[in-house]
Image 1: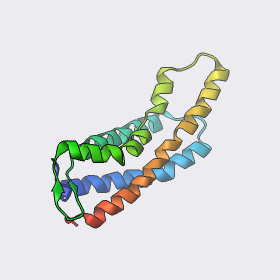
Image 2: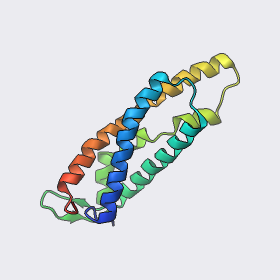
Image 3: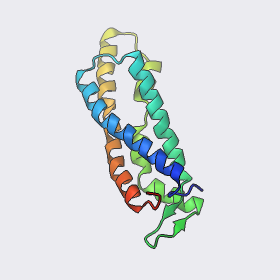
Length: 146
């Protein structure tokens, strides 16, 4: 299990916070003003999504602190607590909607245009990542590494 107070976990949390803030600003702007996603943005999205997927895995193997400050290192209990809480927000915000639509691209231009609008709306769950800021604030408040 990863100690939630170790330096490398703190650095990871800071990186994730930076990505969350970046996406919280960029995603709404792109939804509003971008008609077609450029190749560079698609690559950047896939890279950022990869970081968020890795973070989901890391959350399953990171010990938790209870109210008394004791570490919970039981893997099943940590997984259960994560599944009951933040997992679903993290999972929904990582769904690769654009990749799915690119793989299942439609032939008809009218249908493709409608699908393009749907893909733009499907990016909205990424904004849920802003909720992670609340999670990060709680982590940093309780962190003994800072």
